[in-house]
Image (tube, rainbow, N blue to C red; front, side):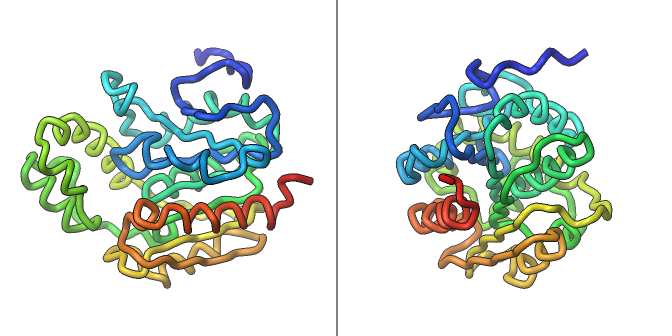
Length: 262
């Protein structure tokens, strides 16, 4: 039996809230790309006005301060845990942002919330990810040996950062969570459901070798509401290269277009 949800004021290891607020006008839940935790969003609370948006960075098991916990490698179990852990913070308007695998998880979590009759995000921001209906069956990586896994991962997803590749001891720490996340991605099967009653904003990098502008445009089919598409200079990890510009667009989508302060 799952434990009872905790109050919004009670900490959960699943979230890093650098500037926690009791009742912010809007909460932004940020879902990481494969192998990552909260760190890609570390600067975001400083770049968004805290009087308007509270940034809640998702911290899955198996990484950062949860490094010694086993990673989840099955999407249904991950979604169940996210519903349980995040629901207490749905007491105010909220939005989801996810990059790459994080975009897929944010999308499927939104659909799971709809199935359960729970509150839905005001806007779903999907970054560096093709529309789920277009996900194709690339040869799986998660079962490859260490060196082949690293080489293929680098070739397919615009590379593992050089500073990580240069430190094998750090690389070996993140490989288990990378494998688990890729197992989720490789095992994903898209199922038709009605479009979401949620605005969608898709973001992409102009030099992303895997995700084309057309693949981002296809997210339009997943919403009954408004759809916007924003492109940034950079590759697959443009959110790390263009952080300030990305957050500026996120702020526009959250505060100006949703009226988060009203």
